[in-house]
Image (cartoon, rainbow, N blue to C red):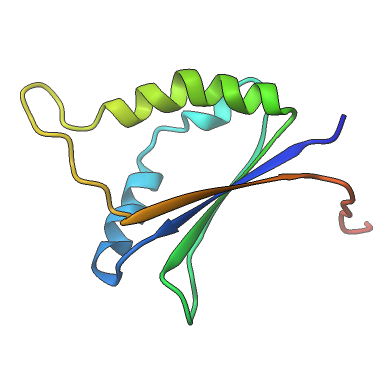
Length: 109
C-alpha cells in the first residue's frame, strides 16, 4: 500500500510570515509522535506567491484521518491559555491537496 502525501496550501500575508513560522516551530512535535506519520516539511515561498506549503507524508489515509480527528484537532483548539483569547490565524486561506506516492528515489550512497 503506497504512502499518502497531504499538502496544506496556506495563504499567508507578508506581515504574518514570522508569526506562522514561530507557531510551527513551537508546536511541540505533536505530529511526529502520531501513528503512521512519516515526514513533515514547512516550505516558505521564495518569490511569486504568498502561499506556504505544509508537506506531510503518512503510511495510510486512515493514519492521516486518525491524526486529523484526534491530535490535530486538540492542537488547534488550544493556544490562548486560561482565560485568554485564542490567537487569530496567521493564514488567510487554506487548501488541502492529497496524493499517493507512486514512485520515489533516494540518494545512492
